[in-house]
Length: 283
Image 1 (spheres, rainbow, N blue to C red):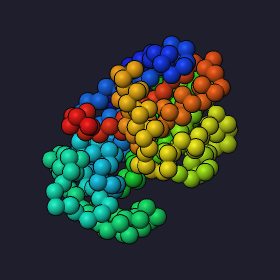
Image 2 (cartoon, rainbow, N blue to C red):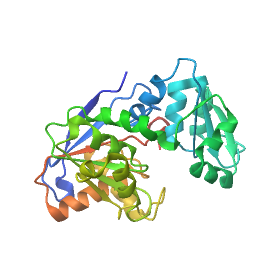
Image 3 (cartoon, rainbow, N blue to C red):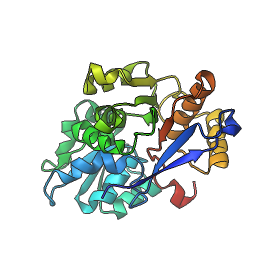
């Protein structure tokens, strides 16, 4: 069953904005490892194949996508991990293994080849279904479209973007046809995500897409003291925790734009998860 959601009005007065200029949508995960958009992006991957199918995907040692896949598919999941096997597994890897995922560690140079030629990863398990890194692909986009429930009250939806899968799903969803989609790019690279999402959804749907690529704070997984301070203040004033790889960057960018351009639209921020095991381990 897909997770239900709550739309929380947040008090933005501490950030110089009208008190309730924004709602934040948070999802009630069935398992702590499957948070935010992860269940949606995996939905069709896991439900369009036989019950005995095995699934292979790849990611880093702190991949929340692999963490979610391990929780959803258990012993039928295979994770190809970037980098050498550490002497001691970190909490993410240990949880994946405890969930039944078979872990395969590969050198970073080999892993970069998988990004360009993902089919090569199937050498680890030729009979497995290959799920793209991050849960992307057509099935990931179709699953992300299921997140468009209950968007009628809003004019604009903001969310972080890595692969752009979730933004593409929203742009193609019937329930979001009236909304602007604002995607805040977490990776460094001017214009690349706008082009990729536009190619998936077509020119007409892409007219409602705005990709903001200037709030990456140096690139993927990079952070600064100002970002860490913002994430701390945000949680202090709203009670909602944001991860520092995607969520805090997107919210920082959104509030920056609202402060600069005004907040007349009815805004919704989609909390796409990204926290992984942080709440459980107290990070």
